[in-house]
Image (tube, rainbow, N blue to C red; front, side, top):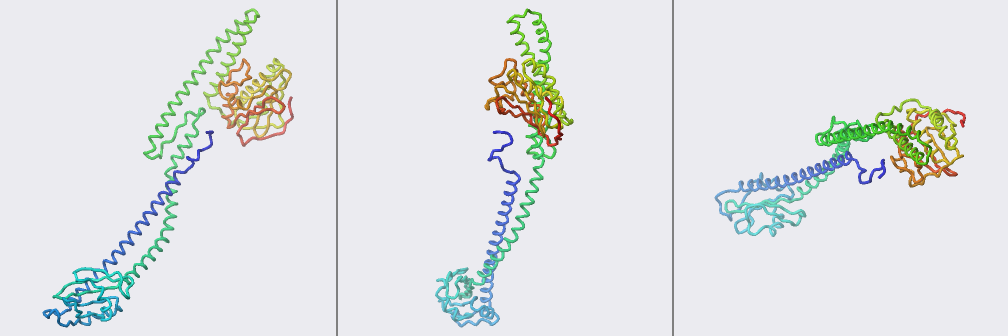
Length: 467
């Protein structure tokens, strides 16, 4: 997977997911609480109705005269009968003899309608009649034996049903309008809280993204992290410390080895120069030259990696290219290759002059080694911050254009003197300047190497073409 591209299954936000889940949990909790409150209210209403029925039965029973026969006529005081008559038949009391003969009632007509539906035999306690004429919601009753008689109180469920329906409608409608603003505020507060809480993780991620070979000393911040994450960040910092030590050891070893090999190679070259000009001596000279070049490039790489580059200087890319061309002009003449500098614009960018000269030098030296005698290697400077090196060599096959920029990787047409580090050094320098190296085919044959700097502050100035 190429850098900068995220897998779809990883493209999600922890703060958004937690925020929505927290909001969903709160919505569910509020809805559940509302349902429980509504259920408790309904149960309470029915319980109050049951208590009212018991109280009415006791009231009627207490008004009956004691000591009379169970079949004697019954007279209920008007003070007790009046509330039942005022209920328009929704509330009804009946007094029965032991043989179920009606002795007294608050409404004779309603009593005759209800009589066939009463339980047989009577038992102390509540009973319910699901369906009865005039009461589509049914009737609830309570029967109690007192003085040998049965006192029964009936109450229609219409009032309770209407009250429950009205309560539920108003309650649920009010709950919805109440939940909407609460839900919106919950989502906003949850997102803000989670983002604030996850800010240290975002900062740690940004610090981790900046860790690289050029900045091995960067560590992830620990301040402000939750206790659950701190051990992970501390372990990563410990791993980065070990990695930095390993990188420094490798860099030091490569630099010391390259530096230590320069003297023996110089002595060996001097001794070879004293030998007679034979074919074997010439072959040894080529081998020593290749080794010297490899050691030199390793030393350059070690120095480049050991110290961070100061890329804040004002650098004129035209002067960079001119210096590289001037230094390698004798080498080009030795190979029968002409060097040309094409600078239609003088471009100034922030960077490191010496490092950019080294990068262009490596590209030009590489182009000279592949260019056929009699051809021209062109170095072109273009705005906003591009240096191109063009040759008429065999070119680079598309499958090798990315690989040859890696260390110790050489193309199929590489010369014997190549070490496989020159283009890697160019890539490192370009990356330090926020840029990259691009390898293309040159129209008409050859290769085109371009150092594209990632600088937006480049300043172009018109200049003459130098050749």
